[in-house]
Image 1 (cartoon, rainbow, N blue to C red):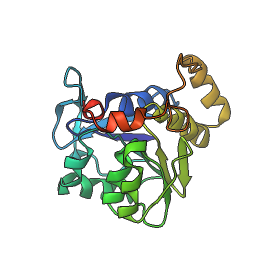
Image 2 (image 1 turned 180 degrees about the horizontal axis):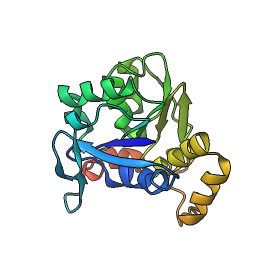
Image 3 (image 1 turned 45 degrees about the vertical axis):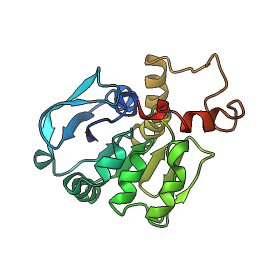
Image 4 (image 1 turned 180 degrees about the vertical axis):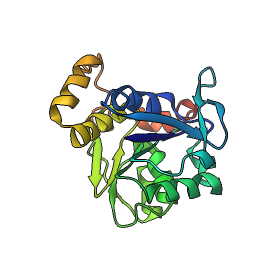
Amino acid sequence: MRIAVVLYEDFTALDAVGPYEVLSRIPGAEVVFTAARRGPVRTDMKSLALTADAAFGEVDAADVLLVPGGPGTMPALADEALVDWIRRIDATTTWTTSVCSGSLLLGGAGLLKGRRATSHWCCLDALTGFGAEPTGTERVVLDGKYATAAGVSAGIDLALTLTGRLAGDATAEAIQLVIEYDPRPPYSAGSIATAPAGLADSLLSTNLLLT
């Protein structure tokens, strides 16, 4: 089973690495990081890069496609080679998935028309421009073969959900225990519904969402 993770400048590291930690542990899984060209691709924080071992032209099919999000999503929407590659790979997949604002790239490829989808809370409304139905109350949204996750950390939930579908609940539970995914955050500000009043507006007025 081939799992293709697309990389582009200024993606958010955990969007890709969180799902990788889960999906790479499925028996028989092969994860390939791919980008416009082979080599390191910088994340949004700049101090970290992931290595693309294959260029777009070297990956023509995948069982699972994962598209991360991040501040680089909007520039990536204008990258016709990237969007076209997503569209072409989608034609071969069993599952086409995204984390955070990566769902906008699925939308830009024309894959979410008439479908329920989620994204990071700051860009949920943008999904409507691609004909999708934004759903902001779920961490993971499934619609047909399309699976979208909310912001950043929700990618782990997405990957465990996919693992259950692909390899069975027992395998998903085993991987969850291996990575000791038992989140008990010290704060309750992890969603719009529970964050302190005014925090979201404050973030939108600063550059914290962009760095």
